[in-house]
Length: 328
Image (cartoon, rainbow, N blue to C red; front, side, top):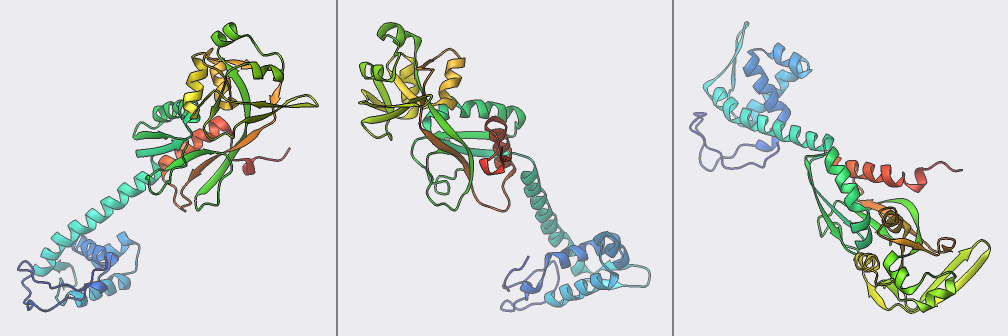
């Protein structure tokens, strides 16, 4: 509560001040005003000191500072009781409202710090945005009904500050950033198709068979695709020219509708296999590619409760950050 001196004139305080005179309000502090309000309410400096957890002398010094800054006597002191002057009563009424508003605002912020509430904006790559994040969000809002969620599923790396985004799931190597980066795991890639596609076009038995099939790829993948496919100690490199290209959400839905075979993170694809939407192609082989998955949020000393809560949901599903895991 440190305002610069401003022209000050009030009839309520009955204090004759010229229109051009200023009061040194920069020396008025919230603890001094709170001490004055406590003395008025309790009628005693000693009682106010006990409530505020200060000494009687400290409260008296606060009162003296406040009266000196305002240039008016706020209290009349007697051996038995301290009572406000007319100016003091008027100041208690107006300043007390300000103190209560300040305390209410502080309590609201403390509540927001401890209880998840408000709008949580999340961004994630489009394939995770439709294949993983909805499950996390459903679990989140069941647990924290005071939070509203907005998801921006995009393969573009959106600017968290410019877009007012609270946290992001990011895949791939990250550039240097001022954000807090929590590396969750290395995503493995699998090949997937729908049962209808395989019924119509046949099921690949060897990596080389992929050249006979329609292949879909993400927009940000290099072309042609160079897939290192491993089985035991044998590594086969297959070069493929994609027929259909789009973002991760498009590729996932295209494959589910029987359009092609595609590689996608197993974190997404294996969920679709479990749900009966997709079939794993070449299940006895492994694509020898991994990409890092990380959770990002502002690197603040005070992380909002809604972000901490979403972070906990992510950790529960995907495990804690890699650096936090014990070494085997």
